[in-house]
Image 1 (cartoon, rainbow, N blue to C red):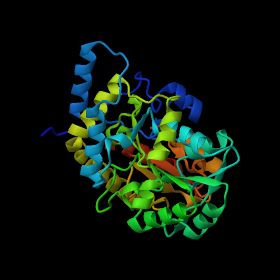
Image 2: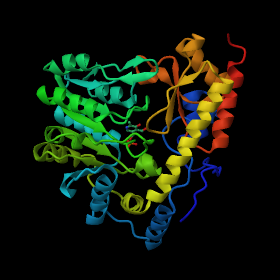
Image 3: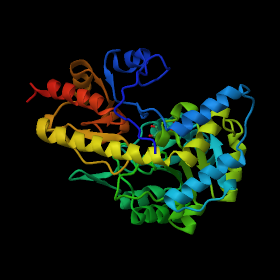
Length: 394
Ligand SMILES: Cc1ncc(COP(=O)(O)O)c(C=O)c1O
């Protein structure tokens, strides 16, 4: 068994990394020297079977057009069966070079300008951009936040779904940034409300392999037959195995009619993986589980570390432990800062690059999202910088 070392510091500068590039840090944070714990990728080296498979493929030296091979599709089918107990057919899988391209095409395919798409703020901010950029409207069904716990507002969801202009719902499952893993009861209720009102559920499950015990991810399509018929489930090995730069995602569409319509539109985006994406998905899903188990343990220890640090050294900053994802949602409300003051404090004084909570929509203003998929020493450095910056604030 390979023992992976997640404490290893790997210099990512000079590797076209958005997270670490001076250009992006200057552009987004106004300072190239901030310590980056923002955009959702990891500072860890990938599983050895993936490195080996890609190296072998590179050695072959010919990189012509590829396609969704049987092995590529079967790896995703087996993964869903093994990890989530969800039986899917190879034919249900459509390929896109990322979940974002898929969401764009889904909106274009299943709604018209002026229609509405439900999202649950505070939520992964590109959802709202995709909707508004295509001339659709955001129907926000804000999460209810009580005592640090986020829950869905079903009465409000029902009201929004009933509106005849509402055609789609983007469900973030598990939820980025609040870290909730939705229960069977919650998913069932979403399924019922959307099913009764002909609202197609697009379940973004990109973070669904990064779940902390005792929580369990339930694919939306597994909840019930009628949910399955009314679902587009977006999956990918990209967050799980740190492969975002290889642009792979598997869009699972059980309903023949919905799939045929979407597949037709997808030809405009690209319906097949690239040579490296294909090899990486096969290697990751077939041989990456040992690495993933070790990764999840390391991430849990990072969470313990954050909890301990906050308790001892920054008690006014609070965090509800995420049930999933490597993103923690830090609450700075106790300081009573405006979103601009909080942003400036992070960037100018603490010199860290985190994601400002307000970009995730209403309710996110007093929060900062920190990506803790990094060596513990980097995490410690970031938290110490924040602690120092907060020192003289009342
Ligand atoms: C919920 C969610 N969906 C989609 C994406 C991006 O997906 P992709 O890189 O496959 O377009 C992210 C990335 O952070 C995410 O958090």
